[in-house]
Length: 425
Image 1 (cartoon, one colour):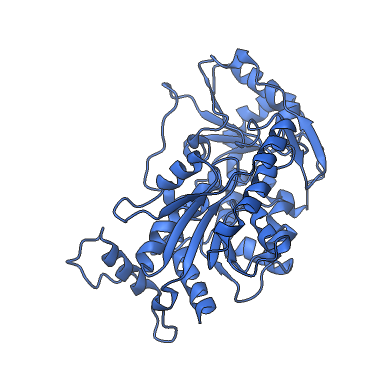
Image 2 (image 1 turned 180 degrees about the horizontal axis):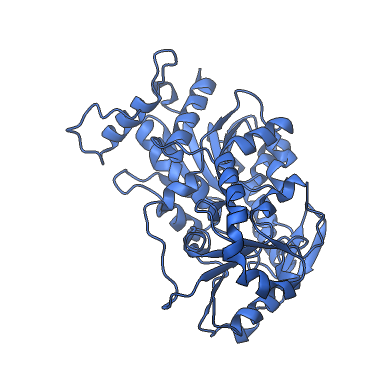
């Protein structure tokens, strides 16, 4: 339990928070120390085109500073927008970490622009251009797998790479082979732990189950209202993968349906990468597709909110607000079922999904393979939810390890310091 051993202390001070954290993790048979990390340098690395990965690791930063002030913590970003997104997740009562920009690869950026972003050369080039900067760190915490090139391409033994996945979905990408190249992995719950152990991607002793820090960043705020009426709000959240996304086959037809009815409001908030590029490529499925521009006729429909990439589209504002979810393969469905509600899935790629673990979440609601089925399915979604609710509830508990005493960000900070103690000894 979290013992308040200094009740007269200011609960907002760093020292009180550190003592509070220590009281949770200290055990006589497993002493916990932070002095051994003194002098170590740890970087939170954000090397991506967009900001959707930030909330998965940024909430850990202030917790880590409070727990181990002897540790030097820096933030490495590839854009001003990322820097601002990280800063918004920090505790204002704690001195902020130092921020450093990654070097830009002008060649990689140019090629990516010329090819419409088919290959993420700016990400790969940014790593290559920043090797001297990255080599200064004892460890890096990352929410994506491109950083493993530091080992596989550039032969780095240091920094050690600590991975926290940016999502907790079921697709095969969540057990990508690159994960085996990380030195330590932070996991959201038992589901991901079992899958990674079975796939030999993590090793006993080199991982920790910590929960989902992204929940910590937004749990205190009330769900927002985006419409001035009481109609049910539907969230349409298609993925960007050119093979798996429902947008290419069903997207405009779905928007057209909602524009022509007055029973529901619609929030159209796709994965931020869908409208980030015009040409979308999947290394996993070896497929490329051209994304057409969104038709202007949907821009001023009163019962449709369109958000193709603001911070609200990645901070759970919409998954917390919506009454009904419509999607395909996005892991945001697992954020949505934090509070079980009706969900509908669009099988636009003729998936033979039954019994396939990559589509486990399609058990959370009806699956349709013809957009003509949408009106009837949507109309009956509330009454059908009783059948699917138990599956959502069970899956959430299996996917996320939630501790009523200690936040996921605090648990992650503890696990990181424990690991750093190991590599420092």
